[in-house]
Length: 404
Image (cartoon, rainbow, N blue to C red; front, side, top):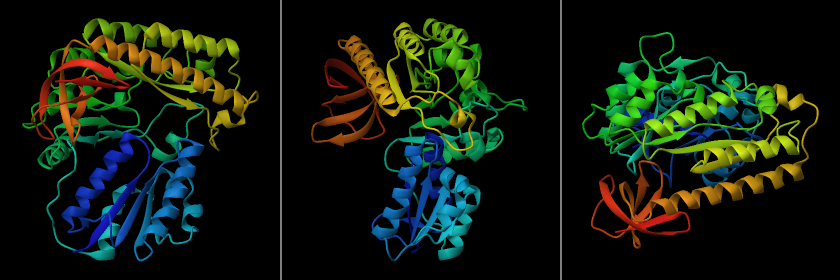
């Protein structure tokens, strides 16, 4: 039987597309074998310099670890640096367009349909790709292209396939998720409602969404639909209005805070997480302090902190007043410490309560999973992966809640 191993870097959309690739390969009779594959597919990322470096390392490691395998490279790094990837030793094929990848791999090895089941109950579901925003630091619009929403019927078919393959939680993923359905009669709230009718699907989670695209209909779905997770990831990037403008972020900082306030008022128990970028060109001490103040004001439940990374071809790469790398590192440390403090405070607030946990792992120390608000919980009880259990929280150990 023909076999493939797939190595993935990057965002939830990349992960969702890797899942699609695996299903499409299974339909063509190509099974997963991570130990001795005939073909290794590397799905790359280039959102930051670190991501590009990690992509190159993963390609080289895949060539080294599987000397007898055909190595195929796809993903955003392959789009942005196709000639460079083709020139790398051991790379047999570059397929920047992922839509052509299953067929291209199948042509190499052939096969007939095989059964397929994912490990773990949480899967990413691609509903949209592309971006029409012009954030000055971001290379993604150049690698992902124009806005493109997946038709509702197609999303539902793939969602059912994921559930049939073992998923009980689906994470709606896209480059610019809030634009889903633009130019059609569909929208994100309607998509969620349609997905909620799928039998066997316990949870629907949103991946990153811009605050300016969070509307009343979406918040009402989160408040009233028991399958929708009470978790919003709203990228902030900066708390400085001046820096926000030079970043060309969608919406305004004032609107961001208004959306946060409306979301917390509408959805009890909502957790809001965010991305913060430090060291954007021209970010002085005052701008950085303003970012810290907004983080404290909102009281995010978790922070993802990034240092500015100049991407060739983006306006910000050529801006004057680039912030020194040592300053970026120090600011990143300060924000991470603040984020850790806020997260501990939130987790401590859940001690003594009962939470709903999706079991994702069975370990010697007990069952492990996440609440719908995305807190990690470990508890001792009988159960299996994919079940949703009610858990009483007795304590916190580090970043994990402990329950019974």
